Image (tube, rainbow, N blue to C red; front, side):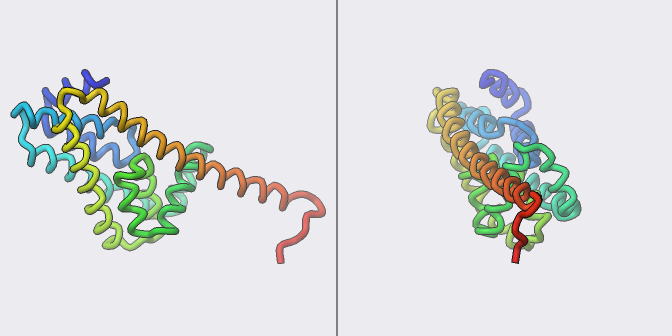
Length: 207
C-alpha cells in the first residue's frame, strides 16, 4: 500500500493529495493520512514544497467537509435514514449524531482529527440536524488544521519510516474508531430491544 501511495504522490504531487483529502471527507475509503505522510516525506527530499502540501491537503479537507455538510443539509433526515440501512452504518451514524448532539461545534472539531473515521458521517449529520453553518465551518477549519499539520509534520520527521508511522497511527485511529462504532452499536441494539419489548402484547404503556 505505502509503495502505491508513494508512486501516486511522486507522479501527481499535490493534486492527488488534494483529491484524496476531498474524497475521504465524503466517506470514500481513501488512505488520505498516508498521502499526507508521503507528502511530508517528499518535502524533506525537496521534491515538494511544504506550503503546497499543507495547502492542498487543507483545502481538500475543508472543501470536502463543506460538501458533506451541504449534502446533509439538502438531503436532510431522509438521507441519513438511507445511509443507516445497514447495522454498521447505523452504528457509525448513531455515534456521529451523539457527538454532534452532545458537543455541537467542538464535536465537529474532534471528528476531524481525534475521531477522524467519524468525520465524514459527522459532516452529513451536522448538515441534516440543522447545526449552524458558521459554527460548523469555524470548528471544521480549526480541526482540519490540526489533522493536516500532524500528519504532514510526522511525514517530515519520520521520512525514512513512513510505513511504520502509518501502521502505528492506523492502529491508534482504528482503535478510536472501533470504540466509537462499538458505542454506537450498543446504543442501536438497546434502542432495538426497547422497541421490541414495547411491541409485545401486554407490555406496559409509556406514561
